[in-house]
Amino acid sequence: MSIVEILPRVRRIKLPRIDGLTQWIVPLVILVGWQAACVAGLVPARVMPAPTDVAAAGWKLLVSGELLQNIWVSFWRASVGFLIGGSIGFAFGLANGLSELSNKLTDTTLQMVRNVPHLALIPLVILWFGIDESAKLFLVALGVFFPIYLNTLHGIRTVDPQLIEMGRIYGMSNGELFRRVIFPGALPSIFVGVRFALGIMWLTLIVAETIAASSGLGYMAMQAREFMQIDVVVLSILIYALLGKVADSASRLLERLTLSWHPAFQKH
Amino acid sequence: MTVQQSLRLSHADARRIDPPAGLEQAFATQARRPADHKASRGLSLTIRGLRKSFGANEVLRGVDLHIPAGQSVAIVGQSGCGKSTLLRLIAGLEKPTAGSISFSEDTRPEDIRVMFQEPRLLPWADVLSNVEVGLGRDRTSPDAKARAETALQEVGLADKRGVWPSTLSGGQKQRVALARALVSHPRVLALDEPLGALDALTRISMQQLLGRVWRDQTFTSILVTHDVAEAVALADRVLVIEGGRIAHDIHVDIARPRQRGSADLAALEGSILRLLLGSGDGPDDAVTDL
Picture 1 (tube, rainbow over the protein chains, first blue to last red):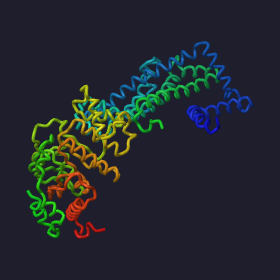
Picture 2: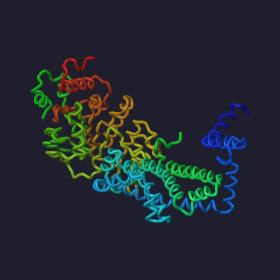
Picture 3: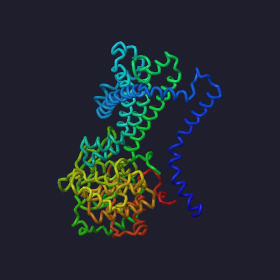
Picture 4: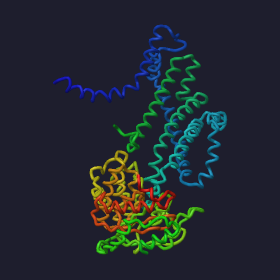
């Protein structure tokens, strides 16, 4: 078999794999450079432990069960807070997008609340809930509420009015119009809200756990700081980065599954 | 009202325009072909004293019109003359300010369908589901899919049933929109510049398709267009709207199938163009010269 015959096949097989790996080249280079700098003694271990040290600390915590326990606690808080805040935001977005009355009643109030940085409520929340679970859930829910509310509202408002007119001409009931025209039309915008909200979700949770918690990743990092365990602090930060990436990938996957009709998501 | 009468009436204030020679010819052989419309399943409609205002702006100022069942009518006029408003009123998309539109029989929503300049397909539904939308209340019936497939076959897109609309060309999208409008076997089809956004070649093949489905399905067809060539190629009758009124009512008595670019079509097209352009501000003798 000549090389000309083989080449196209090789390219066809290899391209997707390279594509999937490309995104990891930069993190990998950073990791290797970091390790090299530590081994060469350019960075003192007090300032930045080598990746291998961080991995060792991670292994120790993994074996003791502490790491998974803390990740689980944080993950639970993040997802429950996200679900609560996200569904309330979605509900308000729907109501205000579909009903002018509801919009007039609540939008101004919501816009005022939106302009208060939700992390500024931490002192108040501690007074209300102590360092209870509900404090963290409240803050996360409040944080994810707004991006989902705003983008749901925007998505519904910007559904092509010509399509809505078309739906009415063809005799769609209000429910059908919502299911077949308005909701699918708003979905791309809702997903933008979800991705924003995921970022805010982690940010809020970590800040809340650092300030007022007795478990979770933020707490683990603060604990480690007390005992000068810089490897554990760095480990926590790396885990945040990974969890953020996982959440983002999950929402992208969901986007690809539900928006396969969208030209931006079609495979070429 | 005969055409000559309507010409005189509407041009009492615009004497510089003589009735064009091509029109006289068309009038001379005005005999209708009643046999053509006997078997029609289309509806006839009668419009009396129709007016429509948007705020202080009166768009239609008293339209009286009778369209027999199965006729193919084209409405032409300068932009802003009210031709699209007239169509939207007939299709029930707007409510008249005064006057009435009545059909020969009681109509169901499925009997009157509209096709717009934009295809207005649901981008998140595949081609077949988009056509099924056109069934209206019959969407849930067991033969919905089969009927949609038949309609897709009629417009020659049976092989595209499963694809997303975004992968289709402009002409293909408009054919899907046509299938959606036809799937409920409407008795009146209102077309609001349906080919306006298409390129010249696609437009010609779409005109042939429209002509064919009109002949096959014998609905009453009302086409708003800015393309006079399209109007004379497709219609039995061309209405020229000026200032919110029907200024000319021209019967196109040219045998079908019509030959695109033939002398009689071109002559009629030229005279209608002169009417249209002459009603503007420009000097009427210069309008068709290049």
